[in-house]
Length: 466
Image (cartoon, rainbow, N blue to C red):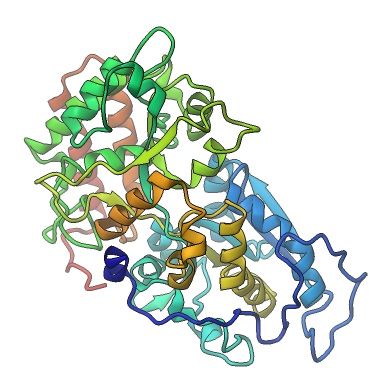
């Protein structure tokens, strides 16, 4: 718990946070209580009769759980929720298009906090501070400061709050204990050389040794978690992407080629066939079915791995955080808060805030944790609660505490050009797997493309302070 104290800076509330204008009843999370038919606005339910559209990720335990709460939310507030769930690639492509088109049919959505610069640059997301600070819209029990500041900061830019962190996130190594034992590997790897050696040893005719999402549409997510053990972390705004002079760190030798050679080796020698087209769902399925021994990815997939109706490896699955290496000793672990956002084009903003408040309340997070759908609550009072910790997988708590003590939240740099950097990196990562070009030439091509992009965008610019 001393490690958690490094992260937790705010006092927590013991009361149940609820919307000020829509008092929450004692209905248990997940209740299927039917909403009133076309309720009329009243003093207790001023937004009754409003319909909100929420867009969330499909096949995600946390966001699946939130959907079960919508009948209770409707009963309590009179607000009807059109809860739309979409595959990862659909959600990630659709949301930016809706924001740029000022599509007022979207009110609230979930996505990663790393997209904040792109969203704020386009003016597509609503600043939330005025809602948080308005006592007529926000209950005093909501206690915004209970959300861990180090986590919530990824949802803030220029001192303005644009999303509410729904969970802390955290990248971990999933591994199969039975496969490790069969290969006479006593413990999970402590550095990247051990990871590569173990992956090759675990690669057999029956199962692959290692998996990551490597399709161009998703490859950066897991690759980031690996290169953070090769590339020096510079600052919380640009992380391992740029230093304060705007040098592209991923392309600087010898670190660039050391990472590139590792990435090529582990995916060519120990990954499933067709790895260059693998999405998160492919790695998840392979791990669940015992077709892969190790998998590096977000911890949010753990509930699916531990679900006996989906997984054959429930008793063999364990979780680990590879320790930071000397090149990046303090900030090697991905902390990617997912946020709940409000569309700036929504015409129902006050009602939308009631839903965001409900979804990010202590009561909701406790319910999600109790249901095994939320492993990394964003609220201090929930994550540090002994009863919640007792529900976490035994090996996961140790891994997550290490993650929170060594965080890098800059999955993308917090600059307007963050999203635009992805294609050149994704192309280079794919070339490392599928081409015979030299590692150094691929990394040089990646760097040249990013240098050109940044120059066209007017860099070097003064380095941002926040």
